Amino acid sequence: MTSNRLNNKQKWDVVVFGGGIAGLTASIYLAQEGKKVLLLEKGSKLGGRGNSTAIGNAQLNLGAHALYINCIEILNEVGVTVAGNPPKLSTSFIFGEQPDQMKVIEAFNLFVGNHLKWKEKMEFIHFYRQMKRLDLNELNHISLEEYLNKTVTSRHVKNMILAFTRVTTYTNNPSIMSAGVAIGQLRSAKVMYLNDGWQSIVNDLAKKAEQLGVDIKKRVVVSKVLGSYPTIQIILKDEQLIEANCLLSTINPHDFAKLMNEQIPQSFLNICNQMIPVKAACLDLVMTALPNPKINFAVGVEKPWYFSNHSTVAKLSTNPGEIVVHVMKYLNSAIESVPSDDERELECLLDFIQPGWRDYVISRRFLPKLIVSNDIKKPFNHLDYHLSNHQEVGIEGIYVAGDWLGEREVLLKASLTSAKNASKLINEKLAVQLI
Image (cartoon, rainbow, N blue to C red; front, side, top):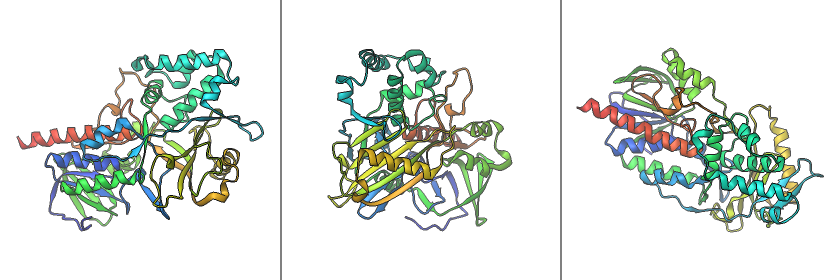
């Protein structure tokens, strides 16, 4: 990395807030067009929620991360080639809520056995066949719960569909999540687990950005943003002043609104105030093996649980004898979550599906309320104006990108798409300036 000393006399074409995947991607798109870009990251490490942590010989992502293959096109455009494999895991369903009631059934046995009635099996199959033909535009204005209540009669089938949508969206709020978004994400649910964790993407992005001349500064804290295009002033905590023609923020929108202070438009504040973060409780484990190796992937049906051995297809440790396992509980924003209770719940889940697991643990980390995404994608009406369609905040020359933007995109796809769209708008803005 380059020195953290800033050149206060230089006026930048663009200053980017945030050294996560969205900020790094946008900086590359801008630099590819010859723009002078300064990227500011307040932390000591780049990557944001794309960070991986080295624990012994293993790389642990922040919770269970799977890369949807619909993200690869944009990553390739900015010079990143991902390495990993799609999971080849037989899904197991965990039925029941209490240990004495719980049972695990493999997907194949679920449909050939007698756990589901014949009518329920047919209803589940019908849903998946019908799902591929649905017009998602017609589902954008209703919630996932409302849609399933209208189209699915079996409680078991409904719970199984909700289990899959939790896995693909990380969201456990079916009453407020857009049915169009949930079904659309379920339709494109092809993923891969990355070798060496998501830090491999972050490292490649940072390397490419620096090769293109992006000036990356870490441990820089911004205290205030003033002005608009073509002179935006960024005041740092140490009272240094930076000037730019344009500004792109990829940080948490609430934090960005505070930096804008009194000049932030009310329309942007209104959207920030309506946001409901997607959260999960995550137990990340480095283990020598699984006591029950037959179960490598399982999801809860009545309970919002996730379990996966990512090392089945991805290289996540330099030690061949180590595996990385993720156990999660998808949190509901309407229910107050007690971290200690959630951790015990996940431990009890492991006691059931992997009895004796504690004897195989090398290291563990519990993340009680990890923010997966800054906002749940809610139903919307095309006649309404939504900032999610745009990357401007209402002040000329100031733009935003992140996972909370976009009507249909979620998670990394939303971050990458909004970063690309914002970069295009900025490049067009600065091109006009040169004419």
